[in-house]
Image 1: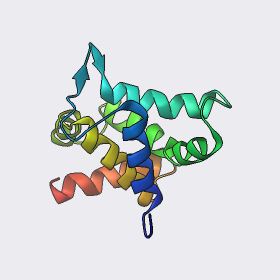
Image 2: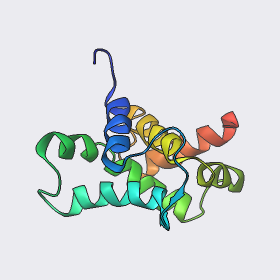
Image 3: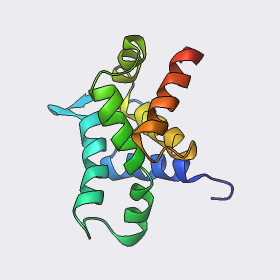
Image 4: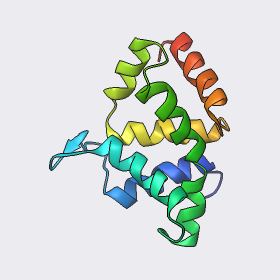
Length: 124
């Protein structure tokens, strides 16, 4: 695909990796899909060779987003309305959010804090 960003490629690949469609619900077969998405990113970072080289590289871009999410959303450090909005996202939209964070070059928790604060100010 021409003119696709790393974030868009990540979202497409993660959706395919977990069989996520536009109508997939957050909880499927007793599993929390948000946690499954985040677990894929963590497995890629912590277990060398867990994914193929191309998938590993793509999922590697999301590690900074995972760190920021863990600190600020899971840790309840940002605006409560934003946390509720993100918690209510479908897995499809959650993958897109992580892709947006990749495209915004979120590579650490400080950049993640700025990203989430900007998102809260924008009201989305």
